[in-house]
Length: 274
Length: 274
Image (cartoon, rainbow over all chains, first blue to last red; front, top):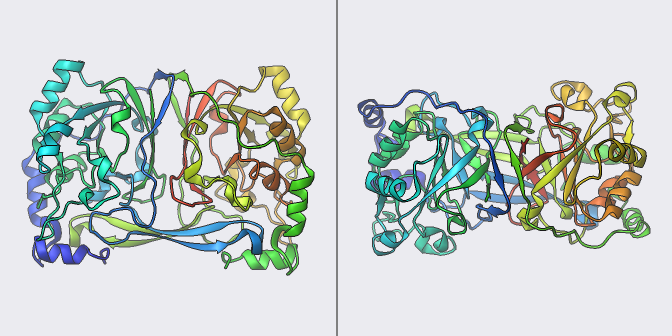
């Protein structure tokens, strides 16, 4: 099992015995207070006068967490020979602009197809730490950032997705997106587990989005944010694009996530209604 | 090349020389007047107070046009052993609730990633032929149906997607969805090429959606609707769900189509804002 590059990373970072902590991860989940099952909202509502595509184009060279290719296309039919064009895809779920469903980091959480559609059309709050991140690629969204956001923009709406704008989307086509050091440790921003806890305790935030490859910061060894957020029944979205083109608050994010039976997530189409 | 089942179907239906007409298809495209490149709209706008999921769940047994499986999932990581869950998918693009991009039936049309996002958030018009189709599975949407729709509901909005409600979504889990006869010819409804021509001549309709496996009716031997609609720069959507849960006019369809480089279409998440 495991994707190309995955087991190498395990050996370098975490040792052979257990990937991502095994029993340690379970202990971490128990120690932090989960806030029960995912909140169910009233029907989403809103209005808009423009749209913004928040999705990167996925090609075979799109950067991946493990650093190895995770997507290939095989032609099945060509117009000249067959009268139509068609491909088959082979893709690891966590590739490109993609969703993390609760099951991705839990034993029994909701799969991608089980997320209620009411949790896929959500108010979008964008927390901008890009200036700090430009100076420090290990920067993390902290509770203080969320407090400051609300002081400026008002309370994060019920049922929202909170997105981190770290400025990293601009690096998607270069090695800076992973920013791996000589030991293979990546350095890009993410949500600190304390910020994830703050969001959980709010009770009505359903999604967390990042413009990087991981909800956790790149150098994370324990994936604490993943292990807190996803088992609590929330969803995550990684490699989101164009956060600079939406307001800090007021847009609606439509999450075109995969409705694929049993999936742990997958490539998604994200469209903001502004 | 070609998916499992595809070449069998070719031999039975169309003969060995050319699939789907080859030169014949090109002639058909030239004879009908295409209405130039796809219309570019002003920014979409709208308001809503509820959402409806228009997407079927895609599993390995989802019915396919060619009657053979087109989707498989392979586990790459398990929570107990690795601390997280992850799968790899192998999927033929035209599987499940999915998009047909212009390139699917043209030599040089737009690929899925090239469709402007403004054409993915669209007014939805639902033309109901389900009563007629229940009595006649070869029923097709005709220009008279579109005229009657407008007489009742007003003009189809600029930039719309016109969807056929044939009642076929209820059959998705049974053999009735393909409804193949003893010769392997399928019988389910679709858009007649004259209706496609009517929609093209309107000039500002960007999408065509069906609750069946094909824009053309199931017994089509020449795919005339595909060969008219797609090369004209319009998109199609097949296997849409829940058309009974949206009004004939007034909803906005958000098309979470694949933003995959060079794709001819692919599994999509469709969400109606009502």
